[in-house]
Image (cartoon, rainbow, N blue to C red; front, top):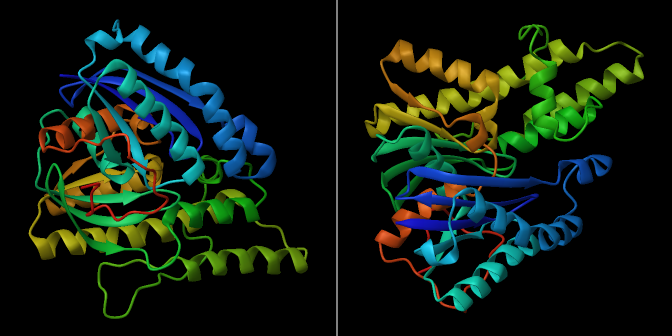
Length: 338
């Protein structure tokens, strides 16, 4: 079964053709990074406008590279939640029009479910159940993946997401957008013990995260140093700060895995590309005898291949939308369109 998948939840316009949820025939991403660098972050209105300009060409190129026409496609999968509402509406509207004109089924796909499904592409033998740590600029969740379309959130951030936490510190250090990526690069040769940061925990909620205090501590340290005209080593600061964030993520995830009895853990989301998180989680899982699954770097950020992967299983589970499908800025991962 071949799915044409469309993703436009933030600042990347993406389209892909995926076969049987595991085989990627094409995966096209039109990035908007250069347009948003000058603003230090994503401007929703500009993102929506650029999606409008890029979506037709992106979908056409995905079909071309896959050697397909719409006649070869069995269904159309599209991200409908969560994300920037204007950006989502571009993808959803285009997918609805295409589904109507080509007389194809329309499959609504949750963005975070897609990130988890990126692991099915990288590791075709992976099957639920397993535990997933989903970390991005807007989300930090520990999810028990009981089946392909059955999810239970057992931990989440109570305030800021891990990715947003890294982006804020990077901006305070004067690093360009995308902050988390550039902070990771700057910290490669830094000393993770050079600066001390708190390791916040949520009282009474062993698996939940809280990053707002950590973010505030970083910003205050930078501002205080500037007021005293004291230099800050970007490499050492970045290494120390990322290490603090990663320890929060790994500690809670391993504690959750032990509690629910899962021996397999998957990373997902944009922050799963972070080199420290990948390295630390690999080492910890090896020591504890746990299996770890990590998406290829090209499937960590927003892309449509992961939408096609999850869309396949949503379709098998009977998920299909009509032309009343709408976009939603927020929606829990354990809820669905139907």
